[in-house]
Length: 324
Ligand SMILES: Cc1cc2nc3c(=O)[nH]c(=O)nc-3n(C[C@H](O)[C@H](O)[C@H](O)COP(=O)(O)O)c2cc1C
Image (cartoon, rainbow, N blue to C red):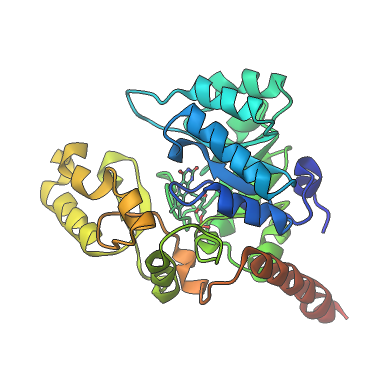
């Protein structure tokens, strides 16, 4: 399939694996890229720019196809060494960066001057337009369904994607709730040039996370995610578990008095315990409603191959047949 996104990134299929904390290691990024999609290493999961440089080198050993790095700009007081991470990206010869979180403007000149293609992930049309105006090459439009941080506007993709199509000139991909060929065709119908998936890629053979995480996604239904940190305006969609229910109880109890320190136990430093050790009640971890559509653990090549053949069957068989 040829779209503006496959052309922009030099990839075979318009499918991107979004950056994911403690999931987006070289193994997954390389597997997605090898399968013809765009794999993405999560920059900040690497503790230092040197570690990111090593991760990029490891990925390069596993694939000679294009892959990217995610840089998430956090709303924290003590900022990570972003200039250092960008240096590692440029010196590692990475030509695609997925930015997310806060406005990437301060870091764009360094990336653009080096010829890096930047796709910014955002959850509203206004932020997408801002990304376009500051020179991003594409955007990833993340609907309310998404795993991770859906923002505070609560607009699902059925509305958000056509709205993005109305307002944007640069190409965009859908993100949030995407799992299969149906998702891809629907995204293209709504004006996207491809799709970005997070949760779906965790339940793959190559995702270097504990088997418990993959099984939890397969077992979950579309009713099993919760929105946490709403009172702090830092909403995150996570899979429910004991820790999450405790956290929500605290949010209800404290109401507007809630501070970050009240929920730290459930959210700070829990990712390694969950993703690497499989301690599924250790705390809150991002997961999309799309878990309800995930029933197996294929390889990335099987998944992407299946999505592309399903999409073709829908377009050539089902849809074209309806017009005949
Ligand atoms: C476990 C997990 C961790 C994530 N970590 C990040 C992250 O560090 N940075 C980021 O930009 N997005 C992160 N995301 C969001 C994904 O890149 C993607 O936008 C989202 O998962 C799309 O929604 P979906 O899960 O419905 O496919 C994360 C998502 C998950 C499920």
